[in-house]
Image (cartoon, one colour):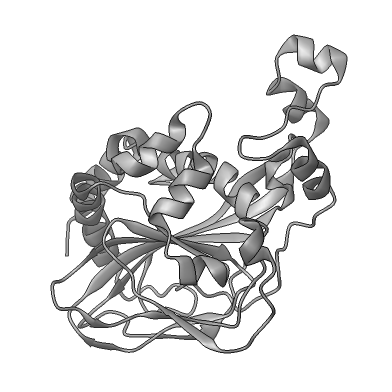
Length: 283
């Protein structure tokens, strides 16, 4: 196990990482103005998963995945056996990786707003980091996770790395969750069958926290991931005005978020956050 000084060094190094340093170029293209959210989703997201309310897309570059995996592996080993929620082992990365996790939340807002049509796309509503747990599946670590829902409005499950030939630890989702975009998917009827999604290094799965899912048993190999929980929260009037240009505040303007039309924003303003009571679990 790493020494306390080694763990401190890994935490300090992780605190310095920003999304721009580790993002996959395809995901980084979303930082352009205007954000090409629709093109990105249609080109890179698995259509079957998207149709059922799950987004699977590239988020980290190969070098970025390797960098984060190195830090996560050491920090996870340093806390092995402490227990985390429904997991036997894990590491709470909220403090060590807060700048990176905040960047990911900011980058995800236009995607989540466009696909789910929730209030996160409306001025004055933000994503608040609620949890971020590094989970390791492998010998001497966790091996599975029972069916559950998350204590989040949105979950981003980011695969940091997996050994070649990994067998097991697929995610299984039960039923579907409605999506707003594209319109053809929005007409999907509710169902209760299972959808299997296989994690890939550097790729993220985003879904509503209320979508039931589980991690299937590990057969061989190992996998590390970080599961990030965000809550949809309304900013106070002071916070909202502080984030707007002075002229906009004076005029009482409410800018429409990237990826939403004015009509979308009007509809989303009435949406609820979607957070649910849950088992305190992460996949």
